[in-house]
Amino acid sequence: MVKRRVKKLEVHDLTIRYGDKVALHAASFDVYENEIFGIIGPAGSGKTSFLRALNRMNEMTPGMVVTGSIKFDGVDVNDWRDVYALRSRIGVVFPLPVGLPLSIYENVALAPRLSGIKSKAELDEIVERCLTRAALFDEVKDRLNSLGSLLSGGQQQRLTIARALSQAPQILLLDEFSIAVDPVTTMRIEDVLKELKKEVTIILVTNLVAQARRLATRTAFFLQGELVEVGDTEDLFKRKVEDNRTTEYLEGRFG
Amino acid sequence: MSKSIVSTEVAANARGSAWWIDQVARILVLLGGISAIVFVLAIFGFVAKEGLGYMLGDLDLVEFFTSPEWRPTAMEPNHGILALLVGTASVTGLAMLIAVPFSIGAAIFIGEFATGKTREILKVLVELLAAIPSVVWGFIGLSIMNPLIIEVFDVPVGLNVLNAGVILGLMAAPIMTTIAEDALKAVPDGYREAAEALGATRWQVIFKVVLPSAKKGLVAAVLLGVGRGFGETMAVLMATGHSVNLPTSPFDSVRAMTATIAAELGETAHGSDHYKVLFAIGITLFFITFVINMAADIFVRGGLKMSGKNS
Image 1 (tube, helix red, strand yellow):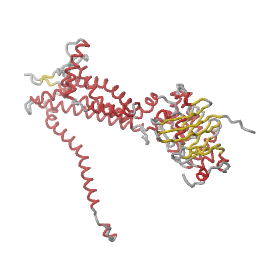
Image 2 (spheres, rainbow over the protein chains, first blue to last red):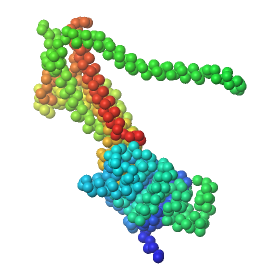
Image 3 (cartoon, chains in turn green, blue):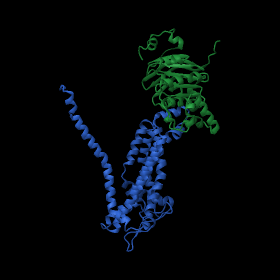
Image 4 (cartoon, chains in turn purple, cyan):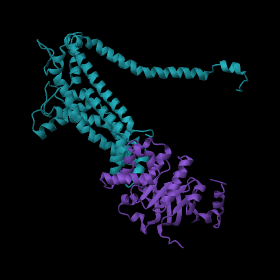
């Protein structure tokens, strides 16, 4: 059976600059619906800049200039009149878990509340569903009112995933989510992501080549602001697509 | 210089210059640290020596705190400070009504919205404003606010609670702005980014995330302003009208505790009842400031539960 692939994101000729420094140069690629799209590459290769451009965080970063286009369901992200509506369709998980100084419940309920949901029953349902999907509910269900920032690092990272899911986003961005998380929790979160893939499109930025191989349907390799290659993860790792730099990175010769 | 090789035993018993420098530095820092305690105790000791014995002995405390009659030089002197207490409190209260929204608003603008040059210039100007001597503020109260209030509100006297409250509010706002802005700056950027990534608007980020996280620092800023209000002397002396009065409206002249001490202490005979009762006012001020600080401390400790380990 050939799966019909719907383009969720179309990135065309995307260039990102900070002042004179080019963070990403003329990158073009597509991300398909319900896949995990891996982005690998050493530090400073433009991975995070791409994520920031996607939900227009560049508007908060002085000096960050984005040219080219990112189309989300065919609409350029810059054409969204309401940037907040755009952001609420894109969930973000940052490298270091940021438990907002609110209770566990309020961390997850914050975004739905901000978007106008007031009913307690509805909020309860959202909180429980998101925490369950982030594989955290069983651990915290008896202390939903205690502070989110008091959870362990791994729990906080799952809390941020639950929070990112609280507005039923269509795209979930994970920016090196595992750097502050122990290996056991990392594996649990990876299992969560495999499940979530059925419902949302996931973009996984990672430093761990093996993690991309385990999870990603397709993978892009960024190096010093250049998109070196992009393709099905298996093809990339079996070196069906050839670029020496990718081979060297995958084999651990640098980075 | 080459390092000579010595036996372990010799090396273990030697004390080099680094060790001595370390010890001396430790003692100097310790002296600096305890000097604050020493000074506070010494000041309290001095004020208490001059006034506490009198306050607990000959002074009629019921009259002192409940009588609005302050006539320390009359044949039958009255030593009631109620009017002075109410005067200080009403001026400070009005000042806070003005200064709190101003300073928190300014801090939010400087900390969250202004960027680059605007921000730097604003910060410098706010700090400059904080450095204006209080007598200059008093001058503004006398020569600008006074006729302005008479003109605008059609009242006979412009030196009153309103005048002093506005002046004191403007005086307290810059330093409160600086403290409040520090508190906002201490909120990790990660909180803002996390909230913005959830689709929160600028205002939602500020009201739901930044202000609650900075709550302790903001309360500290306000209490600092209150402390400033109670302690300010010169500007209040010049702008209140300095007449003993229980105010019923913002247009009544009042007299502040601090201003009373400043104006009268130089004219009293050392050791007289008048002299001692002024010190009793000083002790009362000391006590009020102490209570305000304690309240701030308790609040900050109580607030610790809300901060968590990554704050």
